[in-house]
Length: 125
Image (cartoon, rainbow, N blue to C red; front, side):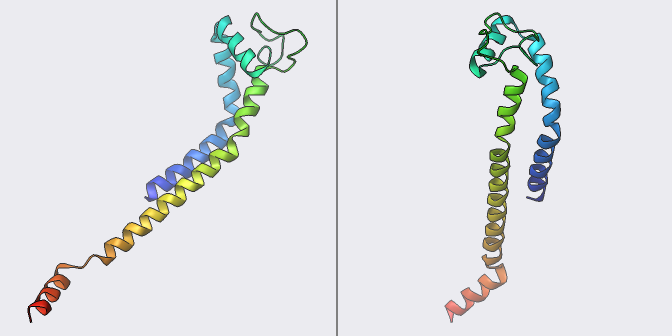
């Protein structure tokens, strides 16, 4: 249980620290992507190019409609989910702690063999 709690804390910290590095990974993926893949991303996020519309855009950039680079739009969208990810992590931690406390309570309430023998002897008398 303690290991799981520490893992969740470490994972949350990892996500928070790695967010700036997320942009670098996007840069590599964008430059390795095919034109068709870039076009799908640009249509989905209404953006053009990577950093801006001049940075390796797909063939279907929509004139003046899409002025933002896809890196900015995608990073903002992922960062927008950060509170939800933190909330889910806290809820999972609370659930794990509750289950651990419940299992400890149930374990303590199980009678020992000595108590069972005593109860059996009292029933016989």
